[in-house]
Figure 1: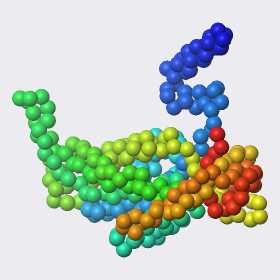
Figure 2 (figure 1 turned 90 degrees about the horizontal axis):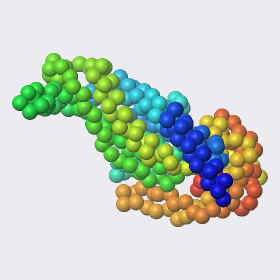
Figure 3 (figure 1 turned 180 degrees about the vertical axis):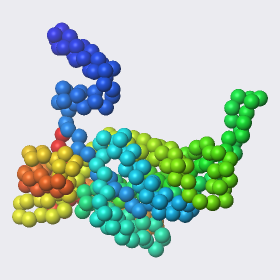
Figure 4 (figure 1 turned 180 degrees about the horizontal axis):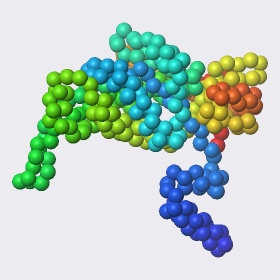
Length: 303
């Protein structure tokens, strides 16, 4: 017992030294390798077309918002895989809306499963406000001319069709008096100011997404079945490998929302499958145990 305690203490000391030398993210990966924790598969995320409600900057502003979102997520969220092909954009653009005006979450969930997505993000740029605030030490305060951008962000869970979060993220930057007046008059588009505002808001959005999805396990979907072979809409892109064993979960009765939405409800475990072939964005598996696995809600990596 004494030797086990000594080894445990030495291990902690080694991991602390690694942490101090190279930082948290790398230490977490090395810790998993040393202690033999299960591997973490990446979650797949895609974006609905960005809505520019105020019209400021037109398509240029929308394109910049998409670039910022891609860049920040790739930089700060290691556990995500971004699906942003032109085909995916076109498919998401066609997701219908309900008579209530809300997105058809069931249609989105069905499309998302076929693409192997875990989350779909919707962004709406609500416009730029011009603010003037007194800032600085009391008695020496100056008026600061500020531009503020509000972004409405909504994240949809593909497994259930539910909204994971629906928030407004704000960011503000200081601008010159001339730029402030031009913004107030909606005179022209200043890309430099727009990029600074997008950097502020996107940072907050990405932190929220990373916090929300960071510790959540990957979930995948069976998209087709032929005899004893099952096809999944995820592969090397999320980290699946030949030999991986996945638990398969059934379905329960869907729940109808007040505005016409239909929410999917996962059921209990009904079987297991083993990966036999892995492609870029899909994989094939065979049944280990269970029946009617094609009627599943989702699959998870077996611990």
